[in-house]
Length: 107
Image (tube, rainbow, N blue to C red; front, top):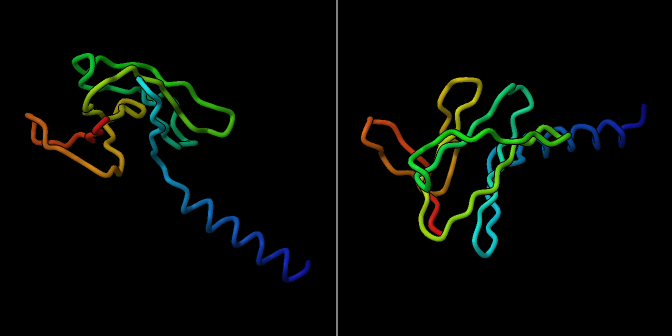
C-alpha cells in the first residue's frame, strides 16, 4: 500500500470528523436545518415558531437529518434525538424557562 494512499485516507478521516454536525441554510422565507447523526433512529425538531410542536425530520442517504421551516423572524429551537433532548453547537443560545438552553437563529 502506498504512503500516499495512507495519507489520503487519514486526511479524509480527519476532514470528515471536522464536518459540522449541525448547520442551517437560509432561503428568502424559510430555513432548512441539518443534523448529521448516522446512529440516530429518529430525530424530531421543535421550535418557537409553532410553540415547540415536535416535527419528524427526514434522513438523507448520507445520514443527515433535515427539515425545512417557514419563518420570518427569530427562532428558538432544539432537537429530540431518539427520545432525548439535544441542543447542538450553534452560534447563539438562550436560556429557556426550564433551566436549559435553546439555539437561537436570527433571521
